Image (cartoon, rainbow over all chains, first blue to last red; front, side, top):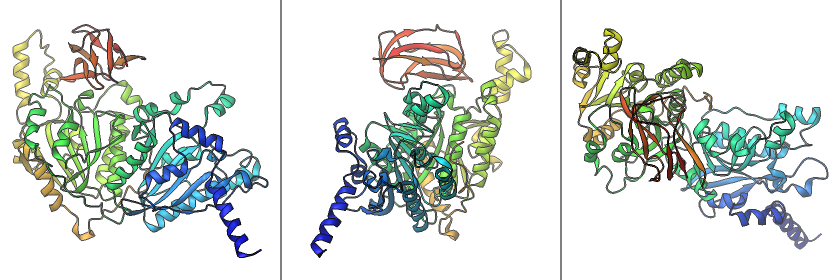
Length: 509
Length: 73
C-alpha cells in the first residue's frame, strides 16, 4: 500500500464519518428548514474555528461500525466571539444519536475537558434516548452504571440548545445546564412517547409532555424558546457573552453602547406613584441598563419576578426585580425557585446581583403551602445569604414583610431606596383590617383613620434615618448610583472572585 | 386559529374590563384588571389575537386559575 492509497483511504473514512446518517434523513431535515449537527456547529461558532475530535469513533457493537459515523455525536473545540469553547452536537440522523458507550464517552470526555481547561461547555441536544440493544442486559446496563458520570459543579458555564426530540441523555445534559434554549417544536423529556405508551399504556402528545410551553412556562427548565435553530444558537452566543469562561475569571467587559442611560428621566413616566397601580418592570430595567443589554432568563416562568443578565457601564450584572404586571409582583413558589437558581448562577460566575424591589409580599394561600412555599422562601434566603458577590438593592416602591428581606433588605453590600419607597410588614390597609376588624364599607372614616395610623413610619427616610438603608435616591439617578456602587463594591482582595458556596447546588428546584 | 382561554393567575375582584369582544390584542395586553392584594392587577392575553368572549362582570369575584375570557390566537 503506497502513500496514495493511505491518503485515499484516509480521505474516504473522513468523508464517510462527516456524511453523518442516511442522505434521506438529511434531505428531510433540509426540507423542513432544520439544520443538521454539523450545520449547527457552523452556525454556533466563529467562522473556521471548529476543530473536531473523535471523528473516527463508532459503535462498539460488532457489525454496527459502518452504521455509526462518529457514533452519532459531533464533538470539538471552537471559538465564540474569539473565546475558546467546547461543543458537542448530537447527530440525530445517526441512530437517533442514541446513548451508547462511545457516544456517551465522547460527550463525557468533552465536558471533563471543558471543566479542566476552564472553558464553557455547549451541548446541542437531539437524542432518541438510550440505544437498544447496546444498553440491554446486565453487561449493557452495568457498563453504563459503572462508567457514566452525571454530576457537575458550576466550574464553567454550560449552555444547552434543545433542537429536536430529546430524551434520556440529551435531556440529562439540559437538566444540569446553566442555560437552556429550546426551538419551538422540540421536546425535552425523560423518555419518548413510544416508550411511555409501551410502559404505562398512556397515549401522550409529546408537546404536552415536554414541549416549549411546558418547559418555559410550567417547569421553568428551559430559559427561552425561539422559532429556529439559528435563533437558538445565537441565543447561546449572547448568553455566553455575559459570563466569564470559568468561575476563576471575571465576566468580560463590553463597550457601552451610545445613548445608554439617556432616557433615565422616563422612569418617572413608567412607574406610577400610587402603589395600587401596576407597571412592567422590564421597561424600567431597560432604561437603567446599557442600551439593548437586557437578556431575560426564564421570562415565561414565575413572571411576577424578572431575572435577567444585563450590563451597566459595560459590566455584567444579574438583576432580580419584582414585576407588578404579573400577580402584582408578589413572590410565589415559581418565582422563589427562579430567584434561587439565578442567585446560584450569578454567584458561581462572579456576577454582581442587583435587586429592584416592589413587592406586596408572598402569594399566600393553600396552593402555595401545598407546594412547599415556606421551603422555597428559605431556599431563596439561603442562596442570598451564601452569596459572596456584591449585592446591591434598590427599593422602588413598596416592600413588605419577609419579601422585603428576600429582596435584599438588610442583606446587601449597599442598599438605596427611591423616595417613593414604602417599607413595612404589610400594606397599611391590611394591617388596619387585621388589627381593628373594621369593615371599610360600614365605617369608612374610622377605617381610613386606622390606615393613616399604620401608614406612619413607612418612608424611606424613616429607614435611612435608622441607617437601615444607606441612601435615598431620585429614581432617575438609579443607573448612576448602581454604576458607582458596582465600582465601589468590586471585591478587590480576591481579584473580584467570590467564594462560590453554591457551586454544587442542584440545577432543578 | 386556536381558541385560547384567558385565565387569571390570581384570586381577586373584577375592577375593570379593558377589552371588548372582537378587539385585537397583543400578547401581554391587559384584558381584565382585578383588584387583589390592594393592587390593580392585569389579566393579560397569553398570545396575540382577537377576543371572542368576556366571561366575567365588574365586581365579580374571580378565583385563581378561573377562565375570565376567551380569544382566538
